[in-house]
Length: 407
Ligand SMILES: Cc1cc2nc3c(=O)[nH]c(=O)nc-3n(C[C@H](O)[C@H](O)[C@H](O)COP(=O)(O)OP(=O)(O)OC[C@H]3O[C@@H](n4cnc5c(N)ncnc54)[C@H](O)[C@@H]3O)c2cc1C
Image: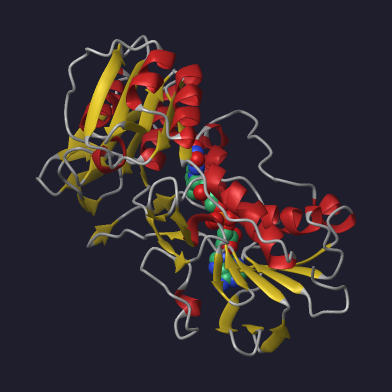
């Protein structure tokens, strides 16, 4: 266990994983100094509401993850906001923040992703990314100021949720995706098709395989020449890891983030957690990343524990994420690299949807819409590495259903 006389434990990134890391370190019994550096002006807050009810609800939900007083009094965190870490000296065990070098006994990197930015040759109105609470407030205010036609670039989870939120306010929505089957890589073809169907059945104009070429005051021109009415243009086109400041540190960076060992350790006394961290998963026999809420939370706790504790615990999990669309809950568990995909229930738009993926003799992933219990059961079987037939039996699925496709 780190001693209170040691240099502080430093957490870089005041987001979900950073907060959970502080909680994990305290839960492991660490009582020494804990400094959290965050480049945003806000204490740790929750991002999922930002593409959901935050932008349209009459009263936006409170997104703070913990009361700032609790951070100080219960977790005894020295919170330094509006400051960015700019350089890491691994052998010297110090990090540069502005002009100051801070020594650490352990450091946890939890800097997350940044929105990829989008622009066109001609823009006569502002464009709206959605990643930070500042983005959310900006879009919320714009939607409330008499917007009627919303165009959304990107049909991934964030773009899809923006479409769903805007429709809940009765706004006309066009969703534009450069790919022909959005989310097929993450969810498989059948689920991707079901999602497009879900958008359309909720009155969204879905344009696939094109982008936005120009933005005028009240319309946009698509790359295929079509004109679409739009007085608000928002986008959710993925992000980039906030790891540029780690270049030259000697850490292994793979373009998606920081490569860690099974203890979420990237180098001696250096740990990573959240969207930027990958780990060697025993369950899935591959270096895995899961840039979603649940893994960020779990990894934060684990990295915080391991950063201060002599009894280090290996990290592994079954990736999980959810998305809320048109009053339905989509959930995905596992890793979509199976051999076969089987759609076992397909009752959209009014009912549910469940697809299971198989890898060898094991269930490797499940995706459900309004199938919470089944997704929970599937997650347990994926974690237990149950044989396919046993998982299917427990899920009450007919073993003789035809397999629809490779994942
Ligand atoms: C709009 C939106 C909706 C989402 N909805 C869902 C959902 O429905 N379900 C789901 O499973 N997941 C969802 N997610 C994903 C989930 O929120 C993320 O996986 C989670 O926030 C990752 O936590 P993190 O701590 O790794 O990163 P972040 O929450 O991004 O926090 C990282 C923090 O570090 C700061 N930082 C970056 N660089 C530096 C630096 N050099 N120095 C100091 N600070 C720095 C960043 O500004 C940020 O404040 C959503 C994400 C977004 C953006």
